Image (tube, rainbow, N blue to C red):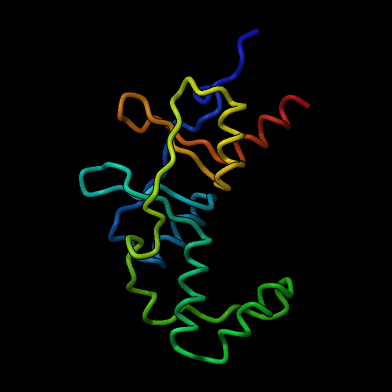
Length: 156
């Protein structure tokens, strides 16, 4: 039996947004596609970063702290109290912020032939939630931690 490789596990349809996508547009895109993150592509279609709900939350936290509101301290209480109160609304400032300002510009890649065990080790070691799969400088897929969990469920 052949060992599984990245190409066996990857999702070939890579969801992506443009650099000028706003934070509210990103949130809608992620919710509509039922994913937690997306690749950010340049105007020429090349991957230049990744962005996720975590980046949105960090931007909201930073915005609240920047504004110096009392809601900044309450932000943590509300989110940790399992929804006992609503999170503060997105500020007008964040409504126009493009993902280029909140994305993670460092990309992590694996080749389609990378063994799944190495993919898992990379995700764990670097504390990542997704890896891009690149073949001859072309983006051919993406692997997320959910893909690895799905593999565990299938083999059980």
